[in-house]
Length: 61
Image (tube, rainbow, N blue to C red; front, side, top):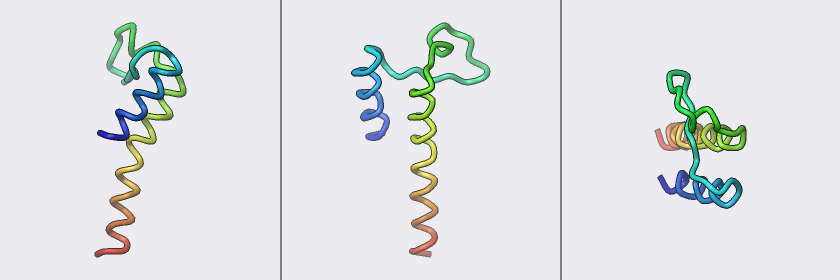
């Protein structure tokens, strides 16, 4: 959640709006206007917890 807040602030400074999420089943105007920069930040949001979990399991299990 903290990482999302940081990324949202970055997008607000850069694009003057909040971060948009796009999914295949969403067809509203805001989600279609998502930029590559926002998509990249969302991928980081998804992979960071997975990588942290894998490191935890690798070293502490």
